[in-house]
Image 1 (cartoon, rainbow, N blue to C red):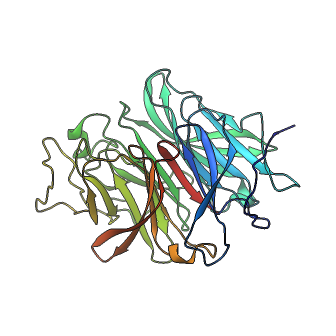
Image 2 (cartoon, rainbow, N blue to C red):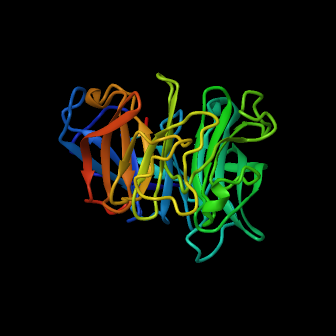
Length: 346
């Protein structure tokens, strides 16, 4: 039997417990609702659905109302399923457990469901393998509530604290993975290394023929440590964050072949020629952890806007992107739940 999660639903939305979900470092998995239903711009109600997860870091919604999330330090991929009474039940046995280092702050970070998940049950995860220490992207096949097979798609990605891990499955059957610089800014400019890059592969592990270099998964370079990335299918745009050391957290749009400038001795406010400039910068650094483009009927005022969560202030901000710029136009949550680590919506 699963563990049933109950919450006093002050605002009931029929058949949809969660419109925007987030995970926090306080081990809270929660759903964000609008009390007045469709058309509301607030106030928002946060309903806890699970309060004893083990450092949840990525969250995804499934095709049948189920919720998938990863636990950084345990290496577990977990699932919560809808119950008949509208609550969610945590499956006690993890879908999968991958090996992760102990005590390094690294582990299981990236998570994505295949765009045809309802028929092929493919789930993709990015994790740091402890021996030898390196990052891997693997594909799991889920059957009867467990992973029945594993296929390594990318291996030997450098690992050393700055591991990145933002992962998305695109409608063209490709995967986008943002890697960290492995604590070496020089690697972000080294085109022979997969560290500090955005990588793109087909879901079977092959390299797309329309990559800038058809023999390489690298499509962008000059990346420091990306945790947030999302695809806006309505504008065919990929947005991603990149965290600076103590200044210049960036919000970017992806252009194939671009160099985003992270390198040794990069100055704050860097606008050097030859590097792709961000849509906006945040100073001081706030530690962006998630980027999510919202499309849905429940929050019309958020339609097409980008939600950006951060670790340092525990906020979820609303961004509006236009052309080569982006600006903050509002805020949903302001530090009430500790650091925010992941975002999703159904």
